[in-house]
Image (cartoon, rainbow, N blue to C red):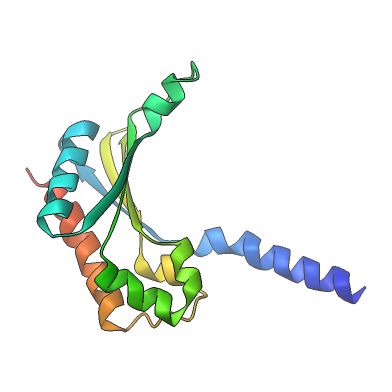
Length: 148
C-alpha cells in the first residue's frame, strides 16, 4: 500500500508539472524561416553557441506527413549554463536553451519556456545573476527576431 501511495504521489507530481509551465510567446511579422534567420543572427551576434537548428516540418515531410512550418533553435553560453549545472546537474536536462518558431493560426509565433519553468523544482537559484542573464537574453534575442 505504501508503495502504491508513493507511486500515485509521484504520478500526480509529474502530471501537474506541465500545468505549471509558463511559455512566453510573441508574434512575428516575418515568415518562420525569416524569423529564425533573425533569431540565429541575434544569437550569433551575442556570442552564444548554436548547437542545432531543427526543421520540424522538414522532418515530418521526410516521413510523408504534414506539419506547419516549425523550427527549433538550440543554443547556449557555458558562462551561464555551467553555473546552473553546478547548482544542480539536472539543469543539464533543460540546457541548452531552446526557442521554437512556428506558423500559428494568426501568423508566425516565437515561443520559449521561462527560466523559472526550465529550472522549477531544481536546486538552481532563480535570483542568481546567471539565471537573470538567461531571462534577459531570451527576451532580448527573441525581441530582435520579431522586430520590424
